[in-house]
Amino acid sequence: MEAVRTCVGCRARAPRSALLRVVAIESTLVPDERASMPGRGAWVHETLQCVDAAIRRRAFVRALRVSGPLDTQTIEKRLNGYGKKVNGSK
Image (tube, rainbow, N blue to C red):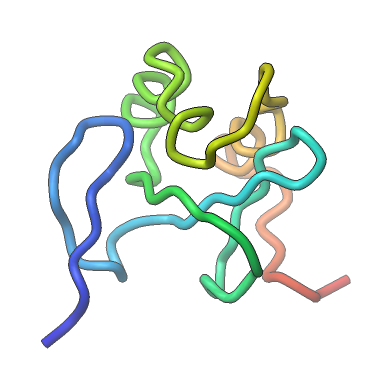
């Protein structure tokens, strides 16, 4: 049985494979493609609607337990089709 996670954008539960894990590195949201980066992670559907809802509701800040605003450009570029690199690839 596959693990189930909750999307921080729409609050719907989904299998882990259907969601994208996001971590905060130095106040920047970074997609964790392999779900193996250290630290707290937040899970979100890979859609603009869910990411926008999470940003609007400050869900990433709460889920990742960081203080201050987060730079979301990396995630927005990822959703727009730029920089589809896997963790550790060049």
